[in-house]
Length: 290
Image 1 (tube, one colour):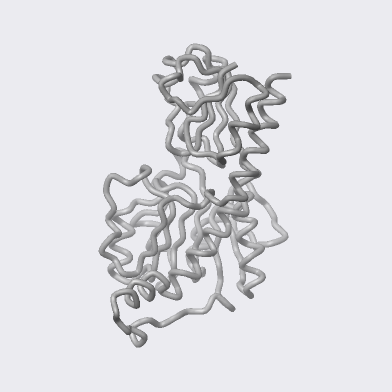
Image 2 (image 1 turned 135 degrees about the vertical axis):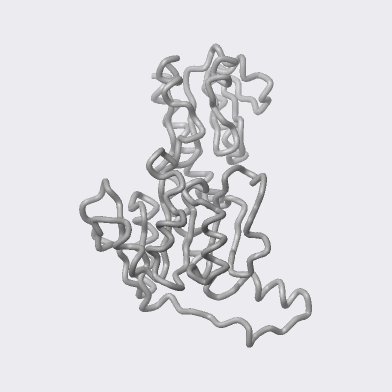
């Protein structure tokens, strides 16, 4: 069996998987691969699978599966798994980092000091304590974020059409009921037809004036140009973002905006998470071989 590690995983994973067969990171050998490990970069399209006649198993190290053509995989008899349980803590901490960073002007403060500037009077901090956090998408990651927000003394509300109740958030029946009252809104949505561009000129009108928006879910759930307008007008006070239309983004409309804090899709890229992902990958392949 040939296992192709197509994207970045923990460096020790290759050795752990060698008991199952040959392990390679040579993408030119996809035509030989029985198992392919991917993260965000590799797109397992119809064309990709047609070029891999031996392919039997795809494992996505991460939460979503929008970079895999699931219908065609099913048609071809290719099993597809992700490692959703592994990344919850890492991504929740990333979202919380963006919340703290954007309201404390960490990016501007650091860059100004490096440039020999003292802009203390320009930078007005905002506390998280006593504020309302609205979570859109209360799955594993959203729940972990809610726990951390409670520890900081925040009120947590959430909208998720698949979650009726939670021990960590007051559930709302409609998304607008979250947007209307939240000081911070954090998105944790998969990219499907109903969520693509869900944050747009119309839904942005529902936000509380001066709210902060955080996205560690999927880039295409936001209409970037509409959000730029809202950031320029002050309707949205700040935006913390870790996810993009592509990795890296072909265009970035936020680069000139001072009220945006950006990360290059680092949410799941902690040392600890990569180790957890590796353990789950090993378990999946073990079960698959059985």
